[in-house]
Image 1 (cartoon, one colour):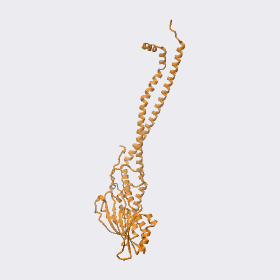
Image 2: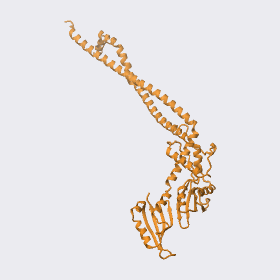
Image 3: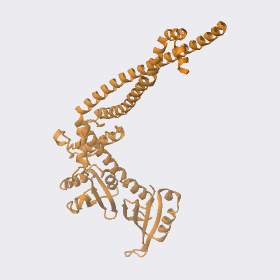
Length: 236
Length: 184
């Protein structure tokens, strides 16, 4: 009964005319629906992927630009010369024989006659070199010694303690000579620290002016112990 | 009795159908335009981001090439930085012995009639042990009253007398052992 009715409807000329009139709309609707359901979501997905990729790339570029900027800022200083200087002042490996000349230099720059000191060969290497130094220092020389001892001898020295006897003008100090091996591992260039670099340069200039025996640094590539490995691509 | 056709009723139905079809056509057009606009916007954005990605990739390649060329300089900068920071950290942890010494002698009697200093010992822990000699008890009292002054308290966190004794050489002279801790 229903199929007969449907047949009648389909056979209707009016309905046929309506379909024929709207063929273009029907085709367009099919195309738009397929665009909306498949092609547009696909494109949105692709766009989201590209955006994500762009975000990652932005982060990588920020790191690379920073790294590049940091390196270019170091053009202002002579890196080789400063490394050689710092290696002299604060060696990676302790050369205990060099302590003798450092003590001699300490005597010269502080104008404090050193009367005796313990052997730099005592104690374990890992614990650093600590020397007991006795010097002749009156009340006018002691401030000079206390001002100049940290680096003007050409070696980085810190004091564990100092005893001063103003009656006999004897100064007795325990001095630690510092050395430290730099562990390999850091691969990220830090921001250029202008204040720190200026301070290092100032120390170097002061040392060269005040300590004539401190050798003028001659920079040779092979003398710079660069055992660092930097990544070619930090993102890999 | 034959079939009667109600022409008026049919016309009414046609008009209704035509109205609905008109609305459907408008809806299809609106849907189509919206779809095309959405697609155009997405394609436009995609084209832009693709162009931007190309530029960024090119910049990344340039930077990496440049950085690889100066790899040895970069390694030296790393070394310089670590060394500088280490030096700075050692120097910054070193107590200002000169400042401590100057602070101490500002408050202590030098070699004078009011007393003299026999010895000073300063260590890394900001403490100092001082040995002083006074010609008599009046000078000692005068010095002890100085320990109570605000000026002295401003410079030292603590002050402790660890011993007072008469010297062997002269029965009038007094030896004072004073332990002080500097303010940071």
